[in-house]
Image (cartoon, rainbow, N blue to C red; front, side, top):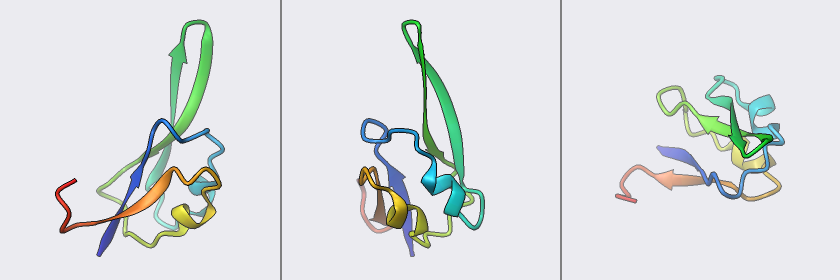
Length: 72
């Protein structure tokens, strides 16, 4: 089974992945840089079933599947 990885630097915080996740494994993370507030997607890995729906809707290609056999 594959799991999902979110590249933090590529995520724009559109949250399309959050909307399609059937098991609520995506959460919204808020963070500040200086006086500006931003958001991005975060993954609750214990809930992820590896369906890939989030990756399918990510227009920034910030979400990809990672094979569990990989050490990376």
